[in-house]
Image 1 (cartoon, one colour):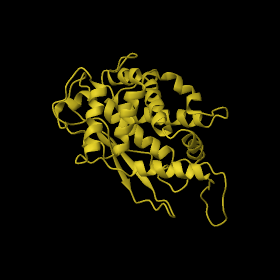
Image 2: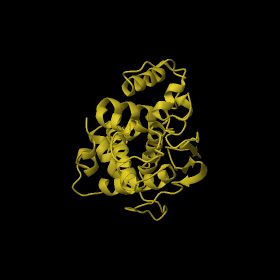
Image 3: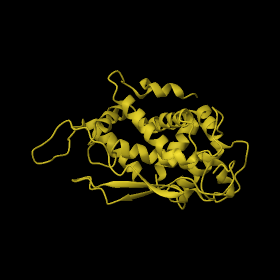
Image 4: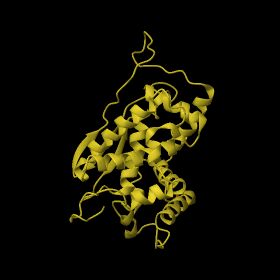
Length: 269
C-alpha cells in the first residue's frame, strides 16, 4: 500500500465464503470478510425489494427474457473462473495489466515486489485475486484499456486533496468487483433485487455492461473518498456510500443505458 504515513500494515483483503450456488434451484448465501487491520464484516445481508411473491416462496421472483438469461449465464461463467497462474491466458492478462499501468517500466517477473507500486499487498497479485477471481483482473484491464486517463488518475492518485494514508488501488479494485457481484445478486439463478433485475436490462444491451459499471463504480468510489475526506480506516464506510449512490442511480426512471448514469460523467478516456 501507499506508505506515505509510515508503517507496513496491509490494507484491505477480501475473502469470499460461499456455501455454494445451485443454479438449477435454490440460491445459497455468500458473504465477504473485509479486513482493515482488525476484522470487520461487510455485506452480510442484502436489502431486498420485492416485486412478485408466490405463496410458496417468500423471496421475490423476476421473469427474465431469453436474452437476459443467456447474458446472465455467460457472465456467471466468467464469475466462476478463478485466477490460475499456470494458464497462459491468465499470465498474459497480468502482463498486459502491468504494461497498461506502467508503460514506462519493465516488469521483471510476474512475482515481483514491483506489484506493490500498483497497490497489491505482496509480490504475487494472484493471492489478492482470491476475492474476485479472474474477472477482477479482467475488470482492471478493461478499465485501463477503455478509460486510460481515469485509470491513471486513480492509480497515481492525481486528483483531489489526498489523505496521508490512501487506499491501495489494485486491492480496492478487487473489493469493487466483489461488491458489484453482491449488489447485483449475480450468483443467484435469477435476480432477487430490483437493482439486480434492472442491471440485466443493461447487460442484454451491452455484454460489457459489468465491466463498464465497474469503471463507473471505481471512479464514483474515489469521488466519495474525496468528498468524505476519508483515510484508510474509512474504506468500508466509503464503499457503503458508493453502493447506496450507485443503487439510487441505477433505479432512476430515465436511465436507459449505463452511459446515462450521472456518475458516468466522472469517467474520462
